[in-house]
Image 1: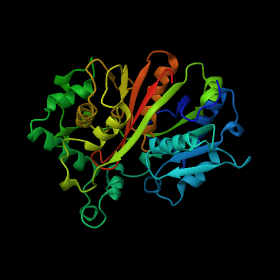
Image 2: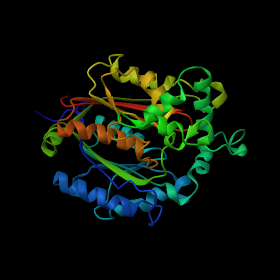
Image 3: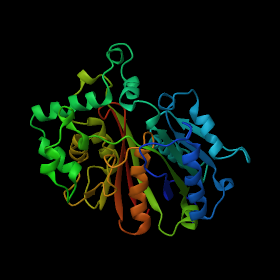
Length: 344
């Protein structure tokens, strides 16, 4: 077979350790270098084999302008690279790379994201993504916004605190013990909220036969779409996610059968309930076998990790078809859905 621009696959995935605090700089270099080296080693390539690089991060989180430029130190200055960046979760950087490969401008791409959440007070840093005129000056923090969303669902009868605890507990957890813990932002308890996590992640994409050369069982991307809801919190129903539904419909055509697993980017327990319903996942689809964002939430890499963990299951042969979701913005404002399969 020859290269086909419509056949694009994930062929490699690596992520930094999920830790509550690192002691390096905020440009991600210390976390990214091992990720890149692992991918080079696993795939038998060098950085010269990468046609396009794209990253996702945030200057607000890093506390410095153009932090993504200093992160390029992890790649190295020689040979010169073709590079781009998005001020979002790196799942959207992967979308840009996907389009780059689709257009025939590259055969391989390396996508990476990084975030040092411990450098500041994350729940307040995220306030900066709110309406700068009417909402941000009030300084509602991220946990408070999520608490409002959770309360709206409870009051509307969409879910219960027990449902939320069941998400956090997983298959073998003790729901009763979780419900006995104190609130941190009523009605959210500690287990309902993603932990502060420093981390980085990287994914290699390749086209057609190049993907088959690099990986015995590539995870082919058969659909990818993202949609946006209004950032005005009072102008939408916070208990639903129309943008997630629209993105899922665009990539699945409404057929949610046959998915072995789904990786959902839900930084709060009730958001997993919203996303599961919005996408229309079947009961037999296993959700967040990786632990999801409630286990580790490296900012601006957690969405990319959802795609990476889904692809990893396919490459390992433990799944044939998977769905990955990433979110950005307050209360599930922006959402991206990707479908990956064992064969194109």
